[in-house]
Image: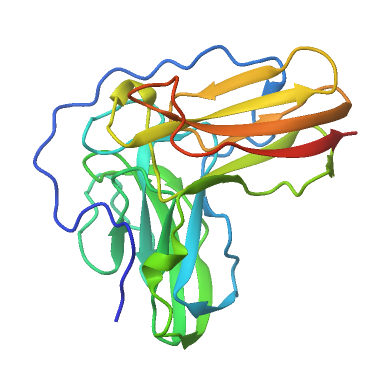
Length: 264
């Protein structure tokens, strides 16, 4: 038996209009820099190849290279799309063909960054792909992973693993980092979207880098991005992450989170 929490839909959407013009991002702050390798990829943020897990298991997704999440209900052009999780499937050979809708192709067309795997014991192949509002693939995907499920715990409700909130995934409190360094955002139980889509119950990230002295650097990721690369001067900082309502950007949808870091 295979199930997943927060799947976007189980049947193809009705034909949608052609994508809108590419979204326009605000000017980058000087402390915000391009990724070192300019790689565009989807990836798992809490699973590695060869992982051994018990289910239910909450799997979380990341997106690199300046790409952002966009729900399918409002078509967007540019570097935008939504996640798909492939189960025991190879990378499609035809990148102009829409992905099917079945248990081996999980769609996250609302802008989700996670799902709960409820797999039976066994070995599985997993892969993430990004696609547009018509479920046609972008050339953005993860490396394939092989995982082993050792036990399925029927006493755990899969829905209990999804708790609404945001987090800074890869930075422990008081972490010491060297620039440029990556900051990974995560939204649990929430949908990420372009601000311009004005989707109800969706939001986008804002990261504020607060030095011990001086002016804070505020960075709005209005195009659905879920990570940033930073290169501030050496010193002590606090990173504050917020999730802003796309219908009312002056409102946050959940509590902010913060962590201190030292840039060396």
